[in-house]
Image (tube, rainbow, N blue to C red; front, side):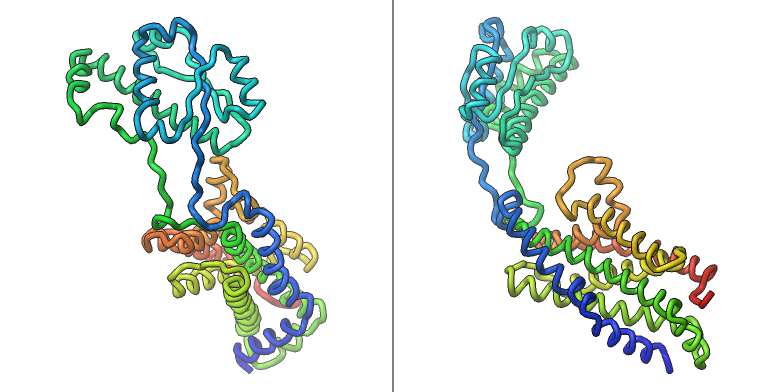
Length: 396
């Protein structure tokens, strides 16, 4: 008896368990369908989003509108072709009027020019505007981005004048190529090729694939503890085969199960839900191999440090859910700290690798994420190897 005999037996044993087949093969497809359908309105349909013009209310004091350099710069900014296509501007007298218009849906965003803005610029202080946010978060971001670009340009001009003198500003303004009204202030782009974006079904197909492949590590835990609980490990160790061969055979069987799971999920989501997995099948295979390695090593680590199957399964499930959550597998999270933490997880790099392929990004971007996933797997292999050498797989 060698490792492949144990591997084959392990694979046949697992495939006979109906709950395993349901959890690893049927449940992921159901969740992808539910999440992809329910959240398709929030994440899009895979086509580039077209943002409608933002209705902006501008509140200025009477002092700010009378022969103010800031007012002239603002008017030049708002009438530039790039900005005028994105904003529909409405002048308002008071902040109360802006709040009322926002509540009634007449405006999407409002900007307040504070009193004394020009005096602040003359004194060398940075220009800052105040926002009143509307109901649509996307339109709020567009409004903030556009007017932040205005204040950045204004502060830059003031800094140049302060360092080099106003004569330089006058000379720059006389050059047609440097006319601020002709500049493009906003550029929209896609992380992949033009016209490509991922849909909710694609996003959750990638995230659920990574998560449920990690759940294959729980079958490894159950298999390792099953031999101990049923006292069949003693019989296996009595055979003319080493403990390492027994251990490797069980891991190989569960690894083949995880890889089979990945193939079924990818093929079925492509046929049933129209998920586009990109044009790099060999890179998809490589990612699935790395996730399989990560799943098995995490399962090994948890199994070897736990006293029983119940505690090991609970710990494994907590690890998988935590990694999926902070990596944005359930919903994208924009918090910087959470994003930094997610870079230490398997799910983050697996999800980013899949999404980059779906967006048909440059191969260098895809390979970067795959390399980082490989680094995480290498660390897990090292930890699992150290623990196995100290603890081993034997009946106690």
